[in-house]
Image (cartoon, rainbow, N blue to C red):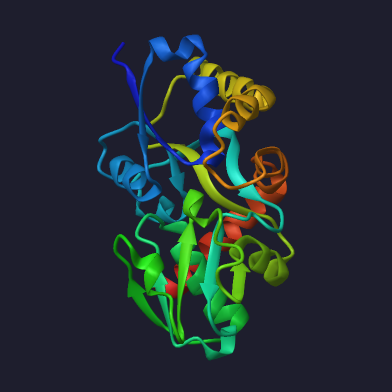
Length: 251
């Protein structure tokens, strides 16, 4: 059997998944690729990989998709790594820079702006180094590990998962494990076992990362509390609601 090609986001929040896969016998059957979210998404859409931990905003773009795991990258309230930073309050923001590494977060901020915050900023596609362009009435969505250490840099910061919870009273799903074709049930079961193994071994991962904590974040709190990995019924409900908003804003 040809090896299953898998793209996974290379952020801190996916370290338990990567650990689980790399320390499981499933590695004999897969080719693991580490990417930023937008690249992971593009590879799955283009058929360059078979499975991806992909931003959920791309699901409508896939001709065929199967959510194959009991686990995801989610949050119930604050997530701490998907942020809108600004020098002015929401109502005074005139333009928002959109993180080029993201798809779901970019869509989420547009949904929140239209339906919750009721603001109409100008949307600007950002390029590398855009974090330095936050000034005046220009805010920015920044995601992932680059948010660590920015907490006190700007007078106004908005956690997008927390804002979604205020809006809907539901958790949020940022990324799911998605296949673009039907995979054998035995492989899916082995895959989920590997992911669970990684999550069960978070203390070991945290201990290793603590030896050189470049992330400027409290690792245990982030990986145990901020990120909620179970793809449960409330997250499935939240995902369906988010997808319905995507249809509204793109229709």
